[in-house]
Amino acid sequence: MSVCPNCGAYSNGTKFCESCGAPIPAEQYAQPAQPVQQAQSIPVQPMPAQPIQPQPVQPVYQQPVPVQPVYQQPVYAQGGYQMQGSYNPPVQKQSTNGACIAGFILGLVGLFTFGLTSLVGVIVSLIGVIIAFAKKQKGKVLGIIGLVLSLALCIGWVLFVANADKISAYMDANGEGDSLEEWLFDVSYDGNIEIIRETDWIRKDNGSYLVFGADDQFTYYADYRVLDNNYSTGTYEILFGYEAMDIIETRYSQYGITSDDICDDIDNTRGIDGVGQFMILVLHNDGLWINGANTMDVKWDSVYMGYYDADRNVMDLRNLDDKTDYTFISYGNFDPSSIVMPDLNPVETNAFGEGYWGDNLVGAVKLYDGDWNECDEQDEMGYSYLEVHQNYNSETETRIQLSIISGEYDPSLAEEMAYEFQETMEDGYEYDVSEVEEVTLGGFTAYEVSAQNDDGKYITAWYFVDEELHMHYITAQYYDNDTAAYEMVRDTYVFVVT
Image 1 (tube, rainbow, N blue to C red):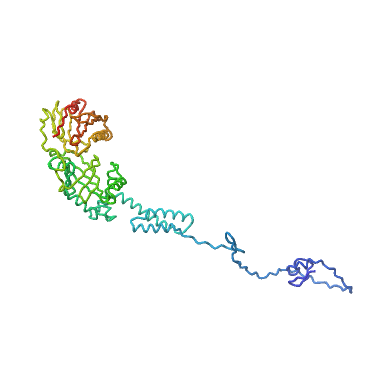
Image 2: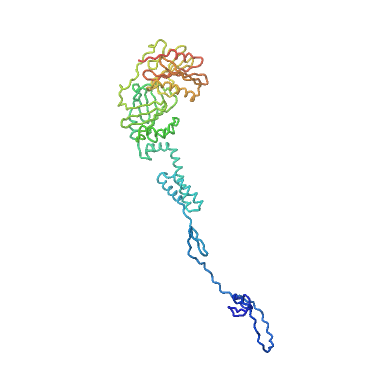
């Protein structure tokens, strides 16, 4: 028999109280029941008991007390820590992407430095935005703003450089500077350009005469002593520094000269001041005047590249077409006795004999078989001539030219110019061209090359250098029915040096 510790009722060895349902301690219901000795007594008639309606025994529950989670101090162990008991980890805050912030700052800085940081800003902002989206970090908006700013500045610079010539011309026309370099780097070449414009220039080695006039006009005389014949006219440009490099590389790319080539030459020949001395002179020719008539019906550019020495007032330039070096000195510093100029009174034609045509500067040939007349139509080779004569046969449409190219030349250059002629006729005019051949012409070693076009017309050229180092360029243009013109030059040409 067990006694309920909760209500005091007796239970017959059950685990739970039959009255209240409370659990009976194990030590009570586990003991074996002891037999109870009944005392003898007088039997008493039991009274009938009233039936008791069994009431459902409701378990007695104590008011539940909400259990608060008990947080214990984390127990740290090697490699981390562990929490005893129940634990809810705190929510971590989102971090801000540093590259997005840096890209935004670079974009803002670029606005105030003409895009100096824009390229780096594009790269940093793009990386930051990609990482921020991947890791769900803050700062994406800043990164996108920085990317847009830097990208817009980069595009602006591309457009700016692409239209640099137009911008520079606009700035010049509005009196805001002669070049972008002046505007960007506060470098001015106005003083040098003004001195060059106000100076008349003599080519030191051959006496040709370059005069700059008003409205950017020029006149370039083949001989400083003759101002009414054999001269070219047109407009000109003078550019310095990085702008000159850009013009050579872009507008005149056919010469194959890059700004890197120019910088290398400056480093090798001029040193740190070379950029400020570097210049180009462009002559936009619109006419070549011989005997009072313009012999050129096309316009062409003569491009000179080199350096201006302000201390000596000297232009050391190279003609990019004929690869000839030119040294121009001011007319006031020119000493006529420093060079030997050709005779202005050449010998008469009959000094060579009856039927000869020419003079003692260019030589002469004996003309026959046809109606020959002098003419002024210039060839299209682009040479600058010291003197040139042409004669035309109206019956056979044959033309002979006797000329001297300006400048002094080493005799070995005659062969080189013959090969240049061969290349020009073959690639530029698509003629059928012969090989260069070494021959004797007028007592000199000359180099001969012939070309024929689609309509059957031939042009044969001879190059040689005389004792005065003048380069002679002689041509005969003829058809198959008049090969005698070629034979005239080959067999009768004579040259006299006075």
